[in-house]
Amino acid sequence: MKQSYVSLKNNNLSFFTNNYDSKNVNHGISELLYLFGNVLQQQNQIELSKLFVSLSDYLNPNFISNKLLNLENFYVRRLKLF
Image (cartoon, rainbow, N blue to C red; front, side, top):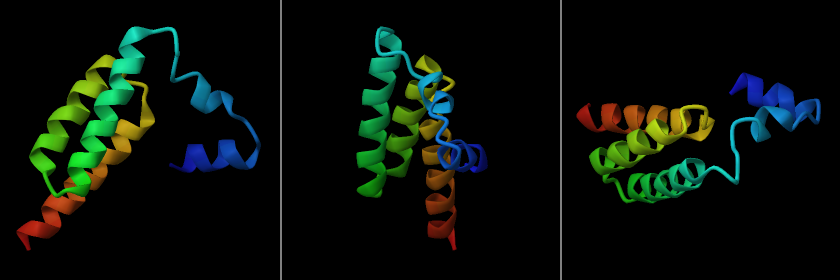
């Protein structure tokens, strides 16, 4: 996240564009799976969200949003245990 902040502050968008290729079918499917995972997380279906995010991460391991959503899922799940 710090790298994202520094890149945005310096108006350096290459950090974001280097991790996504619109011509790569896997990257498109990865983003779609991420969106499903995000919606599922908002509906408190954490385990299903984790599945979609894992598939998304498999198709595009450089997609930073996957890492952030996995981290959110971890904390949401952990808070439910307490």
